[in-house]
Structures are given as C-alpha cells and as structure tokens.
Image 1: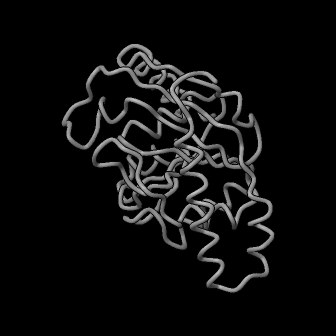
Image 2 (image 1 turned 30 degrees about the horizontal axis):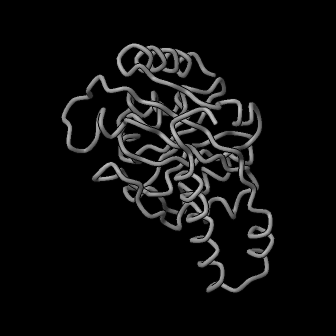
Length: 212
C-alpha cells in the first residue's frame, strides 16, 4: 500500500467500525497476492471502500474519467489505485487498464449490475463484467454487501448510522467458458459474456449475511 492508500484504508475502517458498526465475513477467501476480480452488488457510494477496506491487500477501484482532469483530485485518485473509466463505466481504454493491472497481479472491484440499485434489491447483471472476466485469467470472488442501501442509498442525501456488512464468497475460475471463448464465433462470445455475468450475480445472491 502507498502511504496515501494506507491512510485512507485506516480512515475507512474506522468509519465503518464506529459509524456503521460493520461486520466482515470470510475475507480469507480473497487471495492475499496475485490478480483477483471482486464482483460485488452495488447499492451505495460507500460500497467500493467497504469491499476494499475489509481486506489486508490493496485493491484497484473504478473512478469517472472526468475526475482525473482536476490535478489535486486526479493525483489523489491515482494514489488510491483508481482506474479512469468513461461515464458508462467501460470503454476500451478503461478495459485495457483493468486487464493490464490484473496482468500485473493487482486486485480490482467490479459491479456486475453496472450501477447502484434504485430499490435496494439485486439487479440483473450486465455483460460487461463477463467480457473482463473472459479476457483475463484472474479468479473472481463474488462479494455481497448488506445494509448500504439503507445507510446511504440513492434516496438519502446523507449517510445514516445503519449497520452494514460485507461477505466474500468462494473464488470462481470459469475455465471451460474461457477455453471456449478462444475459438467460438462472435455471436456465441456475446452469450458467454452474459453467462459469466449471470453466474456471478447468482453467486452473489446466494451469499447470506452470516458466516457460513
């Protein structure tokens, strides 16, 4: 961790412990070293640091590309391992940076739903994460956050002191689909991307807010 990242990491851990009374389940399921994709449900702006600060390794985050145009903010985001992406959260440049960081052994948080839920419920997965998973060789750990919609969902202007939790699932590898993707046609490839996204969302849905 860089000094800036560690300071933020400690600050977020303190905030989640004191203000949100957080609970963390099974962080040991996330590899301590090497590339890994953390695929989490998305209910609030506080989800990314919640997922990352519960781990002892540093994690890469996605941030809107326009934020990097401001010198101070851009430098801070880079020190926090932020990846610049376009407004829709994708784009060829963003994908290349993500894959390069995974190739370099980094971990990164992605959200299969693509955006925050509007009602607190899990949303259908978009195929974008499937493309990233297939083009990488990294294991994928499904992650589920609880209580963040109630704490700071779209309907709230300020965070509430509502208890939150994060639970990590068993790593998934997608060997068969990755092998098939190397030789199949484009039509089948699109289907594979969505299959991967749907499998991840199903794995997230199976995680419950208890240590089992």
